[in-house]
Image: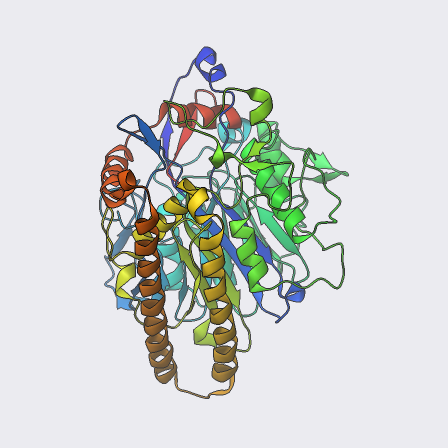
Length: 558
């Protein structure tokens, strides 16, 4: 989740109470251990959200935020070279030799907002997704405050992926940097290789706990902490800051469950935000309909075992998580179906009616949904497959890429801040908006069309996996082959997206046939406003987290 940290904000209780209804609406993630998948692969992923409404000509539209998908080549640096986070001034020495990696940065990088590389693979088969924002409680921050120019989401992937050869090394490197420089934010990250996946919660300015994720468990986690009791003496499976219990005790926030230190209750908020509760509950019930949970449970365990011991999950189940809009929970409706008022807030004015509208996993704010499928049988440099969905996952397609590609298709490169028909993100966003704005014209046909294409890609990808598992190609030969294949597939899919976009526009009422102009203007307004704090968002987040008068997070997304 993208955001900026500010300190010393003094807010009156009266103003806070005026925004009690605001909920945190940002990124969501999941992990499915390889012992629970049909093909023995590890599945994990995240949606990156950008919830920044913009008012334009009396109409409020969702904030637009273009994403790219690129390859950063291996590079050599001198002793005095440093990497710098343009969003907060954090710097760190460059490594003499940094590895090649693929990633999905913001198109607005270089403007002072930050790189936000989001996720990727490096040349050693290590993958990473960063971050899911989680906000520490006020008591903890009074003892171990966040560090203004510490390690933040904006630079994390760019810092870690080019430097490590294993997932554990990645977690250890993050821990090392936090020990030295502190953290600017509370965050959750995932780092994986072909042998293991690590889940890490960054709990305050200098406290953190990471666990090797069990192969026989699954997890769904939005924007809050979920770790319960962890055996901090288990050095093989746990990496933790040395004072994680001490700080909680000094802060007066230390809590136990069953006589054991509970991390989430000690470092997180007293209660889940409504937007967090709706997503974790929906995700659990989607993967495990018989799970023994209720919507109002006090806590949701991170590590979960399916009720059916024979249940196995596939890549399509992972896609379903990121697209889910309560189809399996008829008692709820997605809150992005509510009308917006003049302030950009969605609502009907009827509290009883609004109570059934919840924040879904597949929502209007998603700008990048990604799923990592880690397959041990592939050569190490492949890492696995990333199923990438730039745009709003509700009605846009996934496309697979191996981690060892050396080039990405040209439609992933435009850094335009306005509608651009040559941009993957902008075309996908436009298709989704037309679908949602005109259900009477398009219904569920857009999603069904892309799911049909995905069926073919899933079949093709499985065939490719079998081929490369035994092909005995050199690393260079393999990279060349998979790059050529991915460029061809990307071009074919993008052309189909463009054709669909034109066909949909032809069906629109005459007054809406200039959608590009509307999107273009809205995008410019979003770009201008992205660097300005949104008072409603600020107050809402402060209310949810209880960080009165100390600091606040302004959400930029995820």
